[in-house]
Length: 467
Image (cartoon, rainbow, N blue to C red):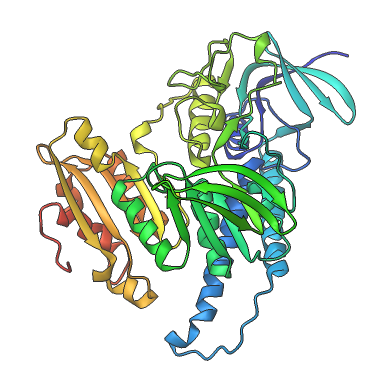
């Protein structure tokens, strides 16, 4: 059979992969996308960001019902219909997966169904239901994503030992849940199920939860979690995990050396993600790896000519959907001979959808000081924001890290209501290289949550009005 040739082939249909394929179609390139799963969207859409945020939204709505009387609304004996919540989540995922199909058709991108293996020289072997075929392309983009890491000796199952996949398909709210790992995934599920009424125990081996965030943000989230009834153990060591008739049992050694047995109906393992770079034929290329991650240059090019890599498999970049998407834009533009601006890794926003929400960009205070900046910090509490009071969400703050010498904005860290939305202004400002002067003279509408961001910038000079 004659090989079919393309200008560009993308392997993987997550946000980075399908966005890259769509952009290639927009540029007029003959493009194909290879996906082994029966549905498009990758981890983010099918078993990650989108379904998780759907459940988090339902948890927020449930809390509104439980506290309706505080807003003068009588809502007696509300009932949580968890199967309906899961059904809604599945509908959202299905609708958006179909939407990705529509985007590919609209931009004349061919969807090749099957498992892709690189054969070198621009050739890809695809194994699908209809057999084996070979396609080739001048440019190939690897967007194969990642999967949850599992602790040694454990295997996930639908009933007790869970990853992000299994926990999204529970049919009932568990009475108790132990979570190992307090990164974004761990704390989001802790926040969610705590609001649904689950007794949650959050275990983290590092000294603080959400360890990539500014230290003050970590402390505030832990404070809020403890107040909400979540047990938080940092500096914790977990051993001897085993299934029991009642769920899972594990041996815990706390930071002060105390040992105890913990029993939980469900156990979520959220200890990070590993790149999907095995068994995709990299040995047939000159692609270089670093602990399983693909090494690339600023234009996402690997050591193999014509092969680029984006997303969770790339060494040195955060495993975030929006990072994968922008890396895809860079790779496609460069391949198509269009202007391409490499990603500035200090301008990548991080968002965690807990209650309160977290949004951050740039350097933490500790990182800025370690780099030798003359640091000046401003903090503004949401307790001084009228809109936060209206919403009944007073906790948290906006923290701005700036360079005292040149008024450069080095980082912005938010924990509070809609913190993951509010970070947008800071990202745009830093990308545009706006100074502290620019932001302090920018009018912020009243009453809004994002007024707090403006107050945060003013707080650097001690000029916040409502603090």
